[in-house]
Length: 352
Image (cartoon, rainbow, N blue to C red):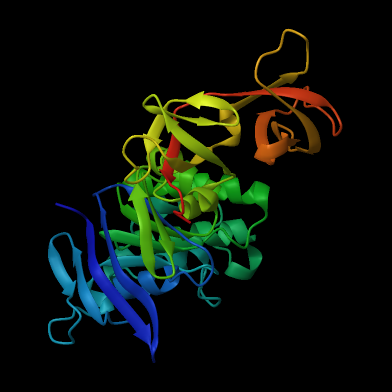
């Protein structure tokens, strides 16, 4: 049984469709990430799951129970769905202390019991129970918001870009602590984000939403390494898309012959295809008489500390992106040699 099942859900505002047949399934105790650009329909999907908005069509099930079938009759109201919701800004009650915020959704008899203190300790705020929201940092407020969402022991927690307002270094720390708390209590979570790194690094399951349609869903490694189409490949990370020719049960590009994954129905007996080669699949070495591979000239080097993204002009194949360790990265103008390792993903020509 799935914790959450969404099947063929549609939602429009006036005459504008926002969700167009969305389907996904989330396993109990897992964290699913809904990844998409602004306007893709991510927040609307969360609001329909939570019951804040009705679905126009389709079915939503929680733990095997239908809570929305696209009809007002039989639709379960939000307060009876046992869902915790964490909005982007936390939405804490300013007149309540940290302890009061976390205990708010509990029965009166449980508000002063040990469970609230246990939750505060779980999110690293056990010493701050008497403070008010304005006395907390942004990261601390988000920890309070997740503790408040977990307090009623919901069967599902929905997180609507809860880390988007935090700076990069704080975001990583708070994200780890918050998601650690989710896993510690075994609650199923659905995280909405536009941050590809966030989705791929923390989720058990990733669904890519584009214009109200899920283009691909699955484990992060699978979705990244074998994207369904060139658009999804580019949205999930830096993508080198090269023309190729099917050859010897593989594919040949300007970088040589590669083992291949089929990203769609490929033509029989050879033919032209579009090939994805990720930057980390390309090895770069200084140009030398004994070097093997394709030669090129570095046009740009973006240093990120732990790694560097190098742009290399290889002539007819255009400019390729290469990811390597930051130490020893070449400089613009350096001549280098490139080789690529497979397997690579290929789609029929014209799949864009």
